[in-house]
Every structure is written in structure tokens, then in C-alpha cells.
Length: 334
Ligand code: PBG
Image 1 (cartoon, rainbow, N blue to C red):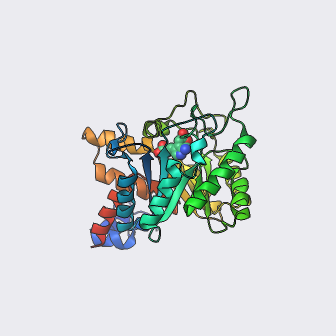
Image 2: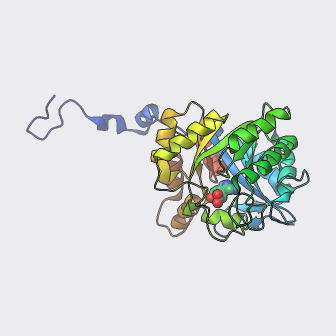
């Protein structure tokens, strides 16, 4: 078994497994399938035309009409789902539009379900930051701090509004303690036993959400470090996942993805429920910006990044590249 002194490699030549596209294709350990991809989409109240998001080239704020088309396209491409985010015309301290049945997010959920509800898992972001005038993910107490338990009451109402609108899955992205259990109980009490709860279990306070703030015209001043996780922490992710699974989460998420593949691998190894990962707006923008400069090969970078997120253990991936990537994957199969 020892390597001969002549400099030859002996019998064992790993390169044999890399010699041709056919051999590499047969032996690839990880694949990406369109059904494992979820497309995040933005809809804005009161728009006449879809509006480009400057820091996310190729991504738009949809009108209700153009959102329906995007959802139909996602279904046609065989994606696993869409994740809906909405920007309301009016914001207030408690995010009233989030629980209004005629609020833009709830209308968009009903539109998406009507358009493609049998073909896709229609998912809705469950968080208050798009709806509050201060931009935080919860309501504030008298001293201006995010009030965890008062926020849970709003989340329960929001979950009900989303389930009533027809959402198949609610995505809890607010990082309040106890949110999964409170939302599960509220859904069950109203008979929504089949509504899935996706817990953004390990969601970090990340600079990579920068372009998203543009996408939802966020009013936030300051940061979310008192509720989202410290990027320094790995062990803490296991605790968050344990809590969410204990409170009844059907799926747990790690977010962002690429800078947190160690956390993702840990969670994938120990989670008893499916694991999701979110390739966030800043990850998208970095690839787009470098590719626009001609500094990286865009298609290869997109494929490699999503493949790596799957390889680290994600069962499915939220990515703004979902539609385009699904197209490339379909070509590859053909
Ligand atoms: C909260 C939410 C955010 C993202 C998804 N859900 C913003 C935040 O936590 O600051 C970010 C997604 C992205 O950057 O692509 N509603």
C-alpha cells in the first residue's frame, strides 16, 4: 500500500473517478433537483409596474398581477415552492397590515394559492419588520426595546391570517423566543392542523441581508442583534434547533447559508426534521456583482454555491436563483 519511491502513485488513483463527464456524472455524491428549490418573491402594494431592486439585479418587487405570473412560472419550472414577502403601503407601530385579511401579504398568499396552489408549497414570511414603521421584527416596549412576549401575540394573529388566506407553510423568521410553540398552538386551536411551520431556527444577525432591506424598503435604524444570533456562535444553533423541534417545528432553517455551512452541517447531522437553508440577498448580490465585472463565471458560481449548500446537508434551499437554476438543471437532464 505504500507509495513506491519512483514517484508513481501505485494502484490507487483517485483521478480515475474524474476522467470524463460520464464518470463524474455517475459518481457525483450530491445533486440539486428543482423540487428542492424555493423561490423568494416580493410583492409591493400599490405598484402599477414591477419595480427593479437596485441591489438585486434581476429581482423585482412584483405587482399582484406580475406575482401571479411569477408563481405560475415557478410551478412550471417544477420548483418546490415560493416564499412570499410583501411591502405594504402603510406601516404602523404594531404592523397592522400583517394581520389585516386585506393586507397585501395575505392577498398575495390567496393569489398564489389560486394560481398554483396544487403544484407548489405556498410559503409566507411570518415576521413584522416589513409592516412596522420602526422596522423591527416585533413590537416595542415603552423603552423602545423589542418586546418578546407582546410580539408573540401578534405572530399568532399573523399566522392565523396567513393560514386563512391559504398559506401551506408559515416561515417564522422573527427570532422571538417561544414563537414556534405559540404559532403552532394558535394554528391548531383554529383547526389549521395541516399548516406547516418552518422555524428559522438558526438565523444570524448578518450583513448579508443588506440588499433585502432595499427589497422591502426597510425602515430599520440600528440592528437586530438582541434577537438574531451572534455570528460567533455555533453551539447555540443546536440549542435553537432543539427548542424549535420541541415546540413543534416541521422544518428548521439555517440562514444565511454560505457563511454558515459549518452550522448547517451540524444541524443536518442532528435534526430529526427536514433542514432548509436560505441563500440570502447578499449572497445573491455578491455573485451578481462579481459576475457583472467579469470576475467570476456566473453560471458556475451559482451552481457551485447551491450544490455546496446541499452538500453541507440542506434538504432544500431558498434562493433567488431558483428559477434560472431549475432551467439549467432541466437542460442537463435532457
Ligand atoms: C425578516 C427577514 C429578513 C430576511 C428574510 N426574512 C430580513 C432580516 O432578518 O433582517 C432576509 C432575506 C435575505 O436577505 O434575502 N422578515
